[in-house]
Length: 225
Image 1 (cartoon, rainbow, N blue to C red):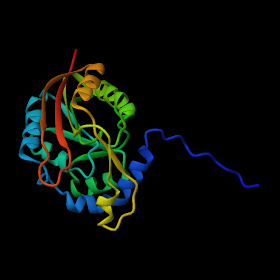
Image 2: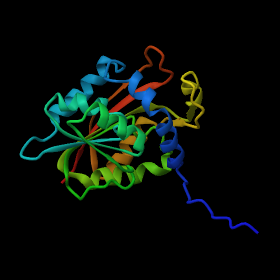
Image 3: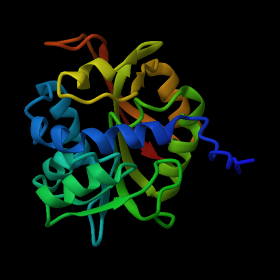
């Protein structure tokens, strides 16, 4: 009788997310090399975040869920001492290839590979969209842990309720993957941040533009002492 080895539990589906992005990493880096896909209002929030991050000796900023590194580059060009972390080794490989002067690490948002109080800012730019609501508290707890008191966090996501199937979007590039994204209510994200000791400073919620299907939201929060 063959030996059956049970698979490791993956209740939040992160293994599927990692595998999907490993598969599409090269095409993703090719088609989204920089910030030209971002709306001006979104970039204004990112620039406000970069300006609000406490400066000082060794004031590092973490691009959490950095993908192929395009937002890391944008923040570096605005004077941030940036590092990136992403679940997908394939995406990190693209980030290292395209931005060899920056530091990128493979790691999970639910278990960030950094000590406490390491960063003056954390960017979660559409990094929570593949996480169901049940997994958000752990992510924000980790963000709070690695942030210095007074540090800032910026979270970008699609606002609303439900899920969207993204597999068809990648099929046109020849990829057969399983990938969905979760919409989150803006007030719920604010409440999750508050529960993790991250006080909301401001928010932007805008209507869909171009090919977008859903409202887009950006929340800026501060780590309370």
